[in-house]
Amino acid sequence: MKNTNCPELLSSLEHIKTLKTQFDSSLSDSIKSGDFTIPTKLKQELETKVKELNNKLYPLENLEQEHLEKQYLSQVEILNSSGILETLSSGEQGIKIGKKEYPLPTLDSILERLRENSEQLDKKASQGFTKLLVVPFGLDLQTLIEKYKQVLLKHHNNNTLLDSDGKPLELDTNQPVWTWDGYQNEPLVYFPQSFDQNNHQGTPKDQLEPWQILLVEDMIDLPKQGEGKTLNTRKQLEANQTPNSYLEQILKEQEQGLTPESWLLLAITYLEEQNKQIDDYAGQGKLSYLPGAYFPKSAGVPVAYWIRVNQQAKLYRINTDNSNASNSVRSSVKI
Image (cartoon, rainbow, N blue to C red; front, side):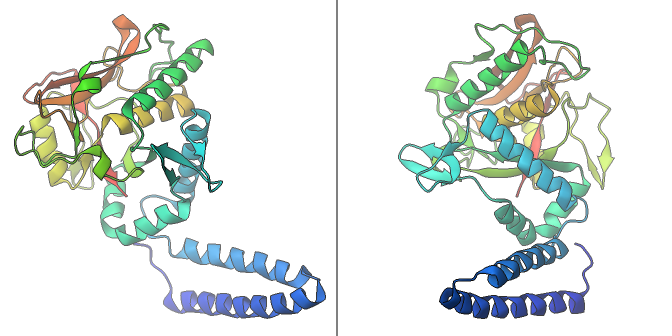
């Protein structure tokens, strides 16, 4: 938590209160006179002072506010450019799920969430969770897959579909993303506490928040076995472990696995920000387990990766006791 000078904060707050009183008084006078010059100037000064106070109250030491704000603006731009955001009946931007509308979370609302759980989030930021994801989780998974396909095609057409080394990747333009048919006909549950078909304690999608705000590790490629770094007592999860083992470690660290939805948004984000495809397991990357979701019927964990031989991304599922040196996992922290 940032060190803040209490007398300084109180002084700032008192100044804001004084400005607000002056604004209210001048606004009443201006309504009578028709000249709004003074309240307009006071309003601008008031907004500036409120922003300055919010900056002083920013709760994280290990994730700079300016960096977080830049990432938020980048996420909004990406959600717009990929066609995910719509204009709602209120005039706000957001998503529609059936007949219901859900506005895009504001930066202020994200900052408020940070303040509510600042100690834990600052610790996770010190452990490498510094990349912001604003995930339209409530959208139908097939809709997000289609948006990802269009982003892949755009980068292919612009010759900007690259691996993590900056080298071009080929793309099957007829099928940029292959998905296991279970994604269409087998129910997923989210954030299971175990991969037990009868006692997973997962939650159906329609019972969860339509927007998820996450911090993830800023990694295009996941670490190989034996190459995970230790940051503030947490060792990065390495390749060649089972989904069961990964889930146990993730829950112990008070994290949550990525879901197919958050993986798709992360993949779109890296393509739009860096022109690079994540989880290219035949390159420098690894196949990524997504233990934030679970297929109870077939006892499978979703996986996502780039498969060079097929020139496409792939969403599949894998057994919970599977391990391979080419397989790893992505974790996240909920804000």
